[in-house]
Length: 171
Image 1 (cartoon, helix red, strand yellow):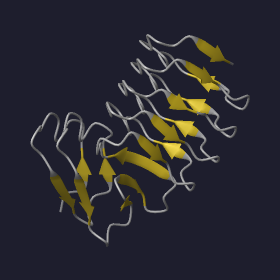
Image 2 (image 1 turned 180 degrees about the vertical axis):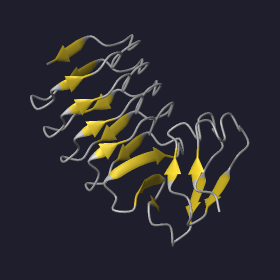
Image 3 (image 1 turned 135 degrees about the vertical axis):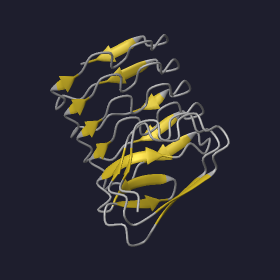
Image 4 (image 1 turned 90 degrees about the vertical axis):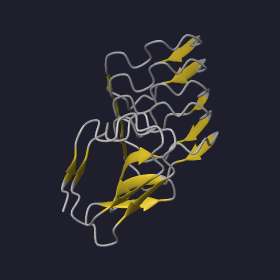
């Protein structure tokens, strides 16, 4: 069976609604489902040792890594407390997302994790956060303020690129 879904596997498949993944899948690129606005369901074979769905979130089996959140048009999302890493492009281009509640034990926000979330205006970064990868919040054009917790030691390039409403930053 299929072991890997590479970059752009289903890129811009605008009508794609459902994907069923076999137990054999061990690797899913962060760009596998880019540009799939109709995607509402990812089913994971229960024998898959690496991935699990938790509601609309594709996660590691132990639920510590959030790989992808299916954009169901939600305005508010609360990320489970078990998550310590939000993977690259996890919420990329979730255009209606306004508020995200992050878990206290979150350590890393991946590249483009919230990039293009044009309605995002409320996000409080937890004290345990240490790394914000490149372009994590790029093009979040409704974001007006952000406070970077003291524990963050790395904010990579382009993190707030094109955040046109950003007025206040506390480092």
